[in-house]
Length: 334
Image (cartoon, rainbow, N blue to C red; front, side):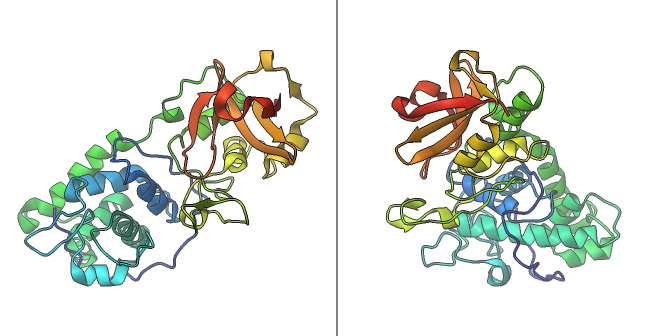
């Protein structure tokens, strides 16, 4: 489908931090090179209606995830921006020195900014329809068409292109929604299993040193030793979690744990758990000569769910090999 948003009546919303307060979950079924950008684009919007699944379904309809896609109307790239609209919304998100609608990172984050603005416009428009449907119609046909028809343009408009564009995307969102628990089977109920399920929604989300909040993934920072990849500060441009922010997110808000692994151990050390008695949701810690440096969730059956380090993603792996075995320090039950 062609993005026809040449006449825009919506002003760009101010950029929002990836650390805002809505929980939009992960995404599945997308090419791996798209996943972190889709998550980042959704995380940067303050409107919970803009989910990774919605963005993924829209990209599927726009271009089939083809970065070099083009159209007879001049739309370009995976999100099918026409030049006039790209001039407003495009930015060099991937830091390669080019502001290019064919670059996946640039295109998806621009798509997210435009959709976020359109959803905001829809929510204040008094139009009686799902803001997602209205935003999609605005993306495809321009907000002026939405205003003119008082909602999604009818099937008689533009050969039904916008009408079917909205219908198809809304119907296909479900297949891109990450499975509850990220596909991890968590047995039992209570605060521990519930926290584990909540954190597992972000399996596959990048590690970001200092990134993430109790509410959602976010960009991090680099200190003199951590957060770097290939000689550059990866954390400052990576939306994700580090080990302790993932734990904090999992238990929030019913239990408001402090931020660092060491502080989380101190806050729960009065409830130690022997390794042989671990249950899903218990916290497991590793330490070296510098002190406690890592924390994760016990995930059952000898596995841990954790955010390992820069360059890796939130994952489930054997407890014995998740970190150096000699560094295993102990476990607690929050």
